Length: 396
Image 1: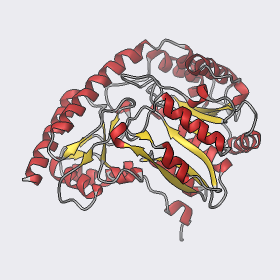
Image 2: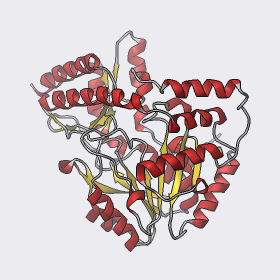
Image 3: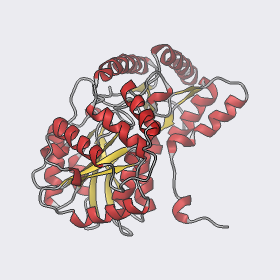
Image 4: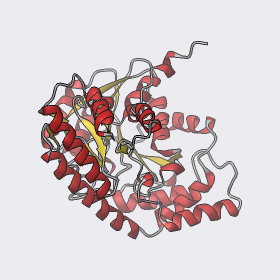
C-alpha cells in the first residue's frame, strides 16, 4: 500500500547517519558517537529528587488519564518558574503541558498553518522545524544567521523573507545546532519587526539555563504587545530526555492569539493528556533545588573549551565558540568533498567518529557539521585525534 506523501516527505538528519554507523558496529568497529544531543547517554542524570518523585507518583497511584491541558499544580509551578526566570505576566491558564517541545511544535504548527502558509525559521535550525511545517502543508522559510557574529540572526534578511503568507517567526535560543546565544538587542529588533507585520513569535527556550559566558533573554520578557509563544521542558536543563515532558505558554497581553489557543486546546484534547507521573516529577523539578546544574555546567564548559580549541587546530576546519547548549557547528574549509554529508560519511568510515552533516539542518548548514560535546574529555580527545589524523591524510 502506498503511504502518504506527507509522511514520506519527512527527513530527520540527526538519525539518518545512524544506520551506516550501525553497519560498521556490526563489523566490530568502535564508533565514537557525537551525533545525538542526549546528555543522559553520557555522565548526566535527572536530579535525584525528580527521580524519587517519579517513582513515588507511580507507587501512589498517579497512573491515570489527566487533564488535556496538564496537571494544574504543574502549570502553577511552571508559572512560578517562568515569572522568576523571565518576569512574564502569565497565569496557569496560559500554560499547555506537552509531550516535550516537539509536541508543542506540532500543536503550534497544526493550529497556525494552512496550505502554503510560511513560518520563518533560523537557518540552520533543528530539523523538526522544517519537517513539521511541511507536514502541516506549510512552507519553512529560512532566515540567515551570521556565522562570523556567533550565528546571530540577520534581522534584515528576516525582513526580506516576510510575505503576505508569513504566519510566525520562530527563534531557537540557545540554538541547536550552532550553540548561539541571541543578544538582547537582536531579540528586541525581532520583536519590533514582528510587531510591524503583526506576527507572533515562537520561542524555543529548551536550553535556557545552559549558557556559558552570557545569560539567556526570552522575547517573552521583552514584549509589550507582540504575542510570544514560549516553549520549554524537562529534556535539557533538567536532564530528563526520555520522560518526554514539556510545555508552552502564551505571553499575549492583547489576547491576539485567542483563536489559536482554542485550536491548540482542541489538538491537546484529541491526544488525551501528557504523561501523568512525569508531571508529578516535573513539579518536584521546577520547585526543587537546582544545585546540580552548577556541577553539570562546569563539566560542559570544560568540554566545550576543549573541543573548540582542538577543532580550530585541525587543518581545514574552523568553528565559532558556542555560547549555549552543548553543540558546536564547525565549517569544513578545505578538501575535495562534494557535500558535507559526503564529508561526514567519509569521517565515519575512516576516522570512526559520527557527526551530523550540516545540510541536514537546512539552509546555512552546507559544508558544516554538528558535534555534541557531552562526552567526557578523554572521549572527545580520542575523537579529535582521529579527526585530526584523518584531515591531515586527506589534505596531504
